[in-house]
Image (cartoon, rainbow, N blue to C red; front, top):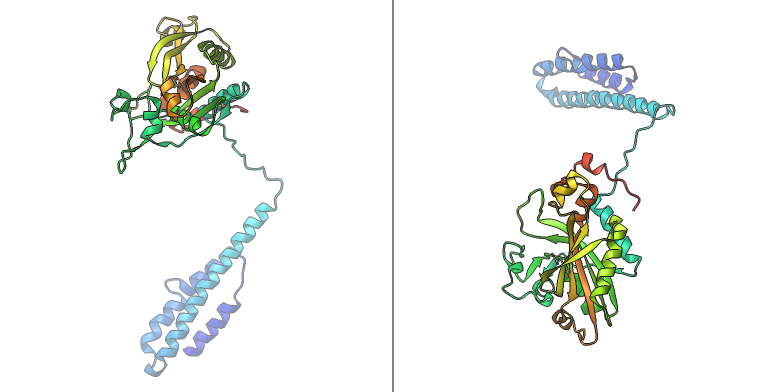
Length: 338
Ligand code: DAH
């Protein structure tokens, strides 16, 4: 019996084929239900005790060799198949899908482009802010409603830190590090503890603008904003409505004249033809002082706008949540070289 197994070990070692049928019948012959291996295993009980050890170990080797042989022959066959596929240069290529920029990135780049043409630099600040930069230095007193727990995400382990609620915090950081003249815009993500709906989301994007120099007046602010709206919307007709922000005095809200041509125009402007697009004002002397800039010598203006709002207007999108859902059918519609 032992010599029989040895014979099969040799046969298995020599066996070679690339024919699928031959490999399959080799497999059935050896490991099929009535195959060679089953027979040898059934014979085990009849092997004399003295040979059991050698018989068992040879039989195990035979089983291992058979399985290895089948696997290696199958593998060889597969790789020769794929080799021949690669070699077929007449096969059509695989189409490569190109991505597109996110609409928020497109609008952000356009706004940066518009302001960089009139000498504004780009600046950034951290998304996790401290109380000073997000609130105190911006003249937002301790019990101001903007600090309300419902609006702000505080860091649970250390409530001195929070997720910035606006990019105005970058104004402070910039003024602490740079002396006037200052012209900078600061794009970035901001966070508010809001109920998510078609009109509001708890993460969105803003761009803050800051201009500080000698003799800066409200007229400079208005002219800059007209230039901006003309460049972005092709329309420079704006109006400034008195408003309140703790960090500017006086403060205003900027409306752009949208017109009343279509039904949609009526709906989005509530029948007035005017649309609010941003907040602005002259930097409050307290804010300048907080940043060690002398308000007797310098003055300046600031403005802040929401990128989502602008993108919704320009692309006529009526649900803010679409920006964050990563639906390829939505995203594919925005192509831009910017
Ligand atoms: N920080 C304001 C907000 O989050 C936007 C803003 C308004 C920024 C007026 C300004 C400004 O710089 O002057 O709603």
